[in-house]
Amino acid sequence: MYDNFLHIQDLAEKDENFKRKFGEDLESLAKILKSFRLQKSTTGLEVKKLGAQMKKELNHFILPERNIKQVATRIGEMFTFKPSFPSGVPNSQLKPKAYIGKGYTDQGTARNAAKDNSPSWQEVAIARLLERKNEED
Image (cartoon, rainbow, N blue to C red; front, side, top):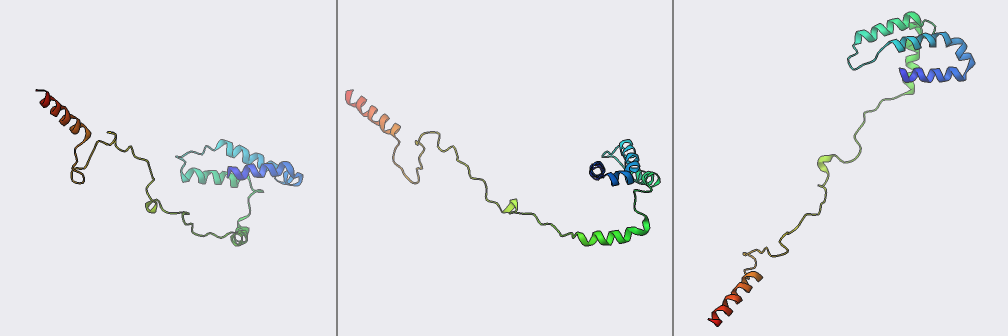
């Protein structure tokens, strides 16, 4: 409603005939809307009071009730409402995001004894040290 009011004010600035016809009602509407505080806790009763106040003070600006059905059918032909569907693929069907893991932190010394039962280089080095020590004794 506030957005429409701003649009109507711009229209009144551009069109002198519109301003002459609805200028006083626009000023009254501006005062009404400035006094109304729209909040999250605004109730339907407060909105009805605002509507009643507008009907009372803006009698030239509001369409007469006898014309509302004709305008509603004319406007209803201009617009159609269709159900919307989310675009794209649902998150549940997306592949997990690829990432680069840390890998082995022991620089390749980890081995799988079931696959390769060869000794590590540390075990070989210790075995040779022990052989040399036995030879020297």
